[in-house]
Image (cartoon, rainbow, N blue to C red):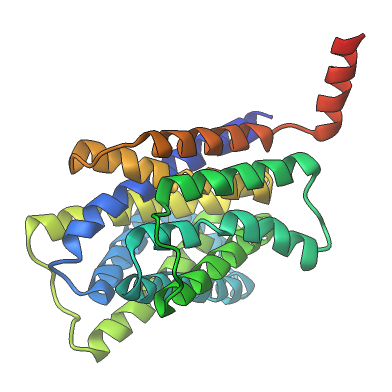
Length: 294
């Protein structure tokens, strides 16, 4: 129970960092190529984790390297498809479509693992999905090529969440995370080099975004995710991650003076309620209601 609570809070903090990155990256990307940004972000995060947790690398095995590279490639695909999608679609639609991983994770569990979530988890998933829609979806729902790219991103992140739940029970979290981050940084650096963009970033706005993203949203969050996600269900994990648009909206309100609407507040409330529901067992709820009637 203690590990469950710790995992919940740490993943929430990490998701908050993910949300904040929307604000700082929005400004930085106007001044730096996306692949160069990703290359520096993941390179610095890799170095940071490697320096502070060097003793843990004695636990590295070839099997860990193999699966770490595999998850790193999946993570890279997720970031690339999301980035390409943002070229053709709005940020709000991209956030909502990415948030569909809330639905995709339990569906994949049911289809691939033959392990269907409970009725209460399904209810929590539906509520969280509606909450994400209220937070991010605009009046326009027309489908364009960018939406397809971002949908591929949602599927990729859903697969990543399921694989992290599986392999985090097998491998030591820090070296396993570093292997993934090294993979993303190498692929990003190769692409940046190929398009002539691999050079030192400059400017306060760019470096602010790189530092915040690399140390907090990447090093901290992926280390926490690869260690603590195993202590909670996949459904609860993805509902926690669905808080990202809410945290982004709050950060934008304070940092960019963007407006928070009643619809956004309702969306955030639904996600919170969904997260609480994911903690409940349907049978226990029915039993308590029966006791109240008596």
